[in-house]
Length: 45
Image 1: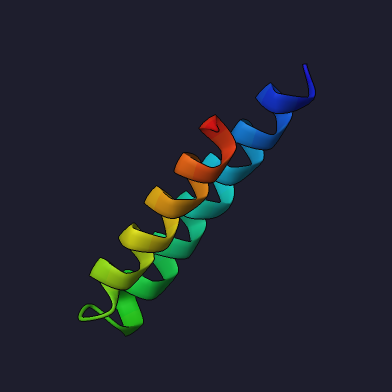
Image 2 (image 1 turned 30 degrees about the vertical axis):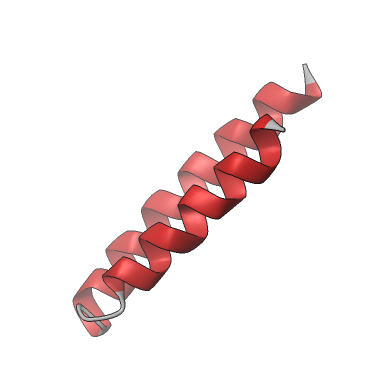
């Protein structure tokens, strides 16, 4: 149950972060994507 809440929170904050960063730093998008992938990988362990 707690895991689902964490995932939902991560997805929402990721969406907002990407939307925000995409407008300002389009070059840093890859970095944000990498961070998200690492976060999910850490959660799935």
